[in-house]
Image (cartoon, rainbow, N blue to C red):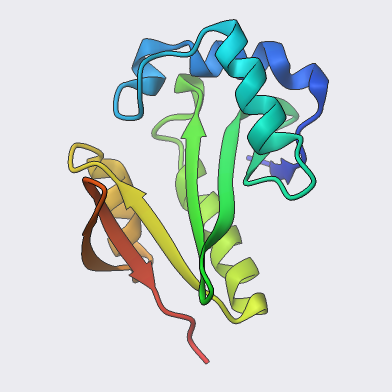
Length: 148
């Protein structure tokens, strides 16, 4: 599977809305988004000068988005929100591998947060050497230290 991470464009709105309005996709995140809330999310987090989310394409089709933003001075936060069609296909693992390489190039730690019910995210964190660090705002926090 060819996985490509890119900046969002305005034309991604309908695909992003389909993703964020899905009850299954949003199950552990928050209530499904309205179109208006999706537009606000796109403008604030994806189309800003320094975006914190990036569009994800698999084999040329919109598959979701990747979270990539500063968590603290030494760390970047990673995460992903995937369309159901891309669940259980290794996409999250591939994204994690790409983000580890990017963070290592920046000499940064990586942080992944998830609710306790997100066992897949927890599994991926452990698989890639993230250590459980505790909770923050009700979320489990996993950190992977930059390996010099």
